[in-house]
Structures are given as structure tokens and as C-alpha cells.
Image 1 (cartoon, one colour):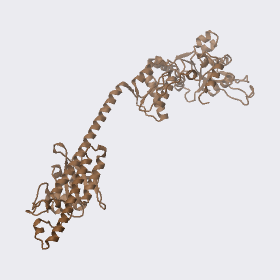
Image 2 (cartoon, helix red, strand yellow):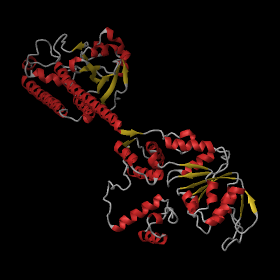
Image 3 (cartoon, rainbow, N blue to C red):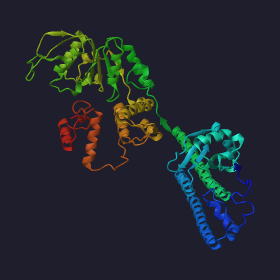
Image 4 (tube, helix red, strand yellow):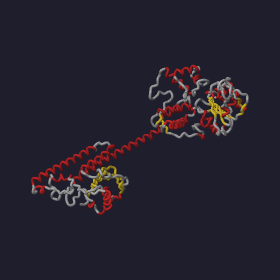
Length: 581
């Protein structure tokens, strides 16, 4: 026997029958599935001229009936396989191909069935699907061209390769023969897998690894149908994958176009290298330029501006640019100190200075020796404390509460207020001489509504801050959301903006930040309009704006036109407590 291409019949018909004995309409089809390759063909003459005619004819009929039943089962198998691939979801194609290879190989008692697909450069066959009988190793990985050069060349030409024995392979297939001797097969039929226009994209092989076998022509033709069924399924899968890829590219393009209507993430750059001071607007640049001018000196600086504009950040920038930056800046919120303790907190006390003073305590000014002290809300200092602060500014001296001994300190004072100290001085509610001492170098920190172009930078800075804490990855903000942020009045300024972004980061679930503006109806639940709930929300919002300062000018009680005690009573009624308590 020798290798041949599909359609060739050297020395006789592909069914294995001798020439002249293939016209029997019963015997010839039945031999399609004859599993004994060495069995001698049986024709009508052999049956009718048998010495024991009756018994031989009965035996032959039994054999033919069995072979016809096998043929019918094989035809049924092929029909079932064809039906399975009709309207099969592309995600199930690979699994169904594996199952089909196994069913056919098991039915025909083959050792292995393998489907290859060509690499893009057509230099390598890639095993994509394989079935192997128990005891045999499945083919896998890559088969380079130099291992089967003759076979790959034939497959690329769209030719079917059939050999029942390695001896049938031609001389030019010597390299292929050597490969087959090492890894098999000894008998094989290989079909090209073709796409539209006849281009080859792979091959389907059926083989016997350890023994030879005959491949009848009708069997080859039916296996060719199997190859076409699998090729069509793979082509449909490839087409679907290309369609999906095209749809994905279209989606990406739409998203890219959509990005023209959103604000993408920007790196919040720090202007002039001042830590945490973010902005590029002329208003903030002017304030930072003043910071750079006065920072190298020891002049007292008064930071003016509304609540939440970032006066503390400006004070930190002043200190970090000064010659005192090696020591820690001491911060004091004058409005948060109890009136009875503010003097001892600032200037220190001696043991026994008052009831409960069980030990000596140094004050904040002594802690800030050779450094900077930041007096936030300095307008809330009691008059008696204002006198002592004036002495420190004029003479650099202070006295502990309960001791007349002066203590010399070297402190740079940076004060801040959201109140009109000049008006308070004219009205006699703040010492005029202290005001002039504090007002040596005033810097007005602009409110957020005067630096709206900085809002995107600030937003992304807060997004970056909360992303690390919350483990979220926000990549965009809807245009309408950013426009709403820029249009809002921001009575609470940067602090209020930070709170809004923190809430949005908590409630947003996707890569796009969804912002609920202050006062807007919640998007997930209807807001209660009950009087108690409205009052509670209003008190909470006012407390947040005043940084939970209840008493004093510009405190929550003053803003709500309530007595401090009345506000505290309503807070207790609604269960409102300062955060951290």
C-alpha cells in the first residue's frame, strides 16, 4: 500500500475490493466499516460457489446485517453531530468539537483524533483540540513546519492525505516519516480545514498509533464531511469573535468620544511646591506669592478668609518656607479652648494656680519656642488673654498663670480669623492695639467661589485621597456633575467641597464619580420632609460649616439665631454629637 490523495484508487477501489467485484450493491457499502483490515474481501461469487453453500450464505448474511447496522449507526452519528453544531453558541464550540472527535474515534476504534490550526505566519501547526484513547498521549502544543514539511505543504494546498502504512509515504516525505516513527501515527487520514475562497486555516487528522489500517474511500468521504462540519463551526466562531472584537472597539470608541464630555483624572499639581496648597487661579497664586514674600522673615502674619478656605494650609506653607521649618509648628484653635482654660493653655500655669491645677504645665507658646505658633480663630480670644498675647508680640515675654516671673520666648506668630477684626476693633470687641500688632502682613485667602477654575484640581486631589482610603478607582466625573460643582456657591468653601467628594466617593459604585450636590434630593432614597428631620439636617449642616463651633461670633448658635444653650438642647433632642465623641 502507498499514500494517495483523495480520489485516487491505485490497484483497485478504495473500499478494498478487487477490481471487478465492486458492483455488488449489498456487499460493497457494508465494507465501509470493516474493522479487520486483513480480512479478505467477500463477493457474491465467493458466497454462491462455497462447498457448504447454505451455512456460508447464512453466516455471510449475518455478517452483512451486522455491518449494515454499523453503517446505519455511523450515519446516525454523523447526522447527530451535524445537528449539534446548528445554532450552537460559539462559547460552546470548542467543547463540542472535543466531544465530536472522541465519539468518531471511539466508534471507528481509532487511537487519536486531532484538530490543528495554522499560526498566523503559517509556519506552525497549533494543536487546539485533541482526543486520545486510554493509554495514548493527547497531542498538544506546537508542531513546527520542519517536523512535517511534506504534510504541511500538502495541507496548505488543500489536499487530503491518506496512508495505511508508513511505507506508502513518498520519498519526499522522509522527514515526515521519521517524525511519525517517533510519535506516530502508523496509519492516518488528514483533511485540510478551509475557509471561504478555499484558503486553508487548519487540518483534521484521524489515526492509528500502533498498528496499520485500511481507509475505505466511502469512509474517507464521510470523514471529509466531519471535517467540513468542524471547519464551519470554527469559522462561525472566528466570525463571532471578530464581531465581538469590532463591537468592543466600537464601544471603546464611544467611550472615548464620551470622554470629551467628562473631566478626566488630572494630576493635582502643587503650586510653587507648597504642600497641600492646590490651585492655579490668579486669586490663589496671589495669596501664595504673598506667602513666599513674607515667609523668610519673622513678621507676624494675619490670614483672613471665610470658614473652610484653607487658612491652616497657608499657615503650614508659611512655616515650611521659613527658617523655623526644622521645628514643628504648634497649632491652637482659640475657639475650641474652654474660656476658663485658654490662658493656661496658651501661656502655661504653675502648680496650685487654681483649683485642680495639680501640676505645673508649660503653655503652647513655650512649646513653639524657636518655631511658629498658629492661632486659628484668634478673634474669639477673651479680652484678658488678648492683653497677654499683646505682651508676647511686643516684648517676647509671657508669665505662667500663678507666677509673676517673666519667661522669654522666641516665637513667630501666624494668626487667622474669619471675622472682620477691624470692625470688631472699632466696636471695642477686640483690642485695637492687638489688631495692629497682628495685622503687620495680612493675607486674604480667597473663597472658593472666587477661584472656581481650581475646583477640578481640588476635586481630583480629594478623589486621590479617598481612593487610597476606600480602595476605589475613580477615572472620570460626569460633565454635568463637574459643572454643578463649579456653579455652586460653596458657603463652606474647600472644607465643604471635601465633604461632598468624600460622600460621593462612598456612594459611587463604578469608575465614574456621581456627585450629589448639597441640598439636592438623595438619588437612592426620598428625603424625609418631617419637621424634626428637616431641623436635624439643618443643624448638622450648620455645625459642619462652623467646624462644630457652637458659641461665639460666627458660631452655629449665632448663625441659627439661637442661644447656645437652646442649640445644645436641640442637639441633645436629635441625638447629635460632635464626631469623635
